[in-house]
Amino acid sequence: MPEASASVPTSAQELDELPLPTRLADVKGWFHPADQVLFDWFLSRQLSREEPGDLLELGAYLGKSAIFMGGYLRPGETFTVCDLFDSPAPDDANSKEMNRSYATLTRRAFEANYLSFHEELPVVVQAPSSGITAQVRADSCRFVHIDASHLYEHVHADIAAAQRLLTRDGIVVLDDFRAEHCPGVAAATWGAVATTGLKPLCITATKFYGTWGAYDETRAALGAFLAGRDDMWHGAEEVAGHPMIRISGGKAKLPAQPVSRHASAAARQGAAVQAAAVQPPPSKPAERGGDNRRPKGRGLASFLGRRG
Image 1: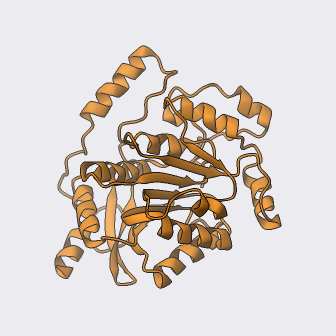
Image 2: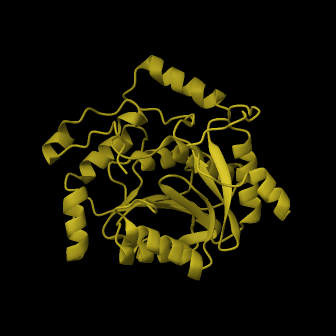
């Protein structure tokens, strides 16, 4: 789902001429504020709990979410990014999708963007995601972000790969699971919930977050976190026996952002101060009347209280 402000290049030459990013917002791509908040929460929680495991992203485009994820990598861990980049697609349907949506994609542009924020590249697998289980060890990843093909058969296989590669309580995130132009992603996502034991923790406008591992504790911690914010609406919906959290946060306050090497000294210093001082905004009493545009749903606190 493109951001209104994102101007995507239309040729390889334009990609080469893009200025090096001084902020994450300069990197072309789609990574909405609510999802940045949630990536930060899940990844930071894993670090604070000293959960072991590597990171994996299937489908990188120009690196926006990969740059963000790279900031949560600990020494000795591996971040693997898998994308076709300039390689030919493995089948006609995928080739048509690549030509329609990502004809300008180059590995060179991804690497330039990533190295603008990090000293080293992740492990880059330039190949179809169908071969990722031969490149990454089983039970080795604590966080997997799937944003590769929109075709059902490919997403179905990517989810199966994530189940094999994730640690016991690892988190999988699926992009475009509810976009009208990606029905295959929706079918594969909810099919996995119905048949594989994938438990839906939460959804945003564009991403699904789930786990095959510990659910109740993670969901309760996420609910408590969201209750402390006044910039993200949330409610609960029973799905396959689980009180999944629905989140709307178009105006969510961004977490600390990765710092670009190309930013000015003042900007780098400001980013460092932001990273040290960032805190969730305090909660405030709900106003009467509410916003009629908010998604309808039961209040999360009362929902969890009733179940408890």
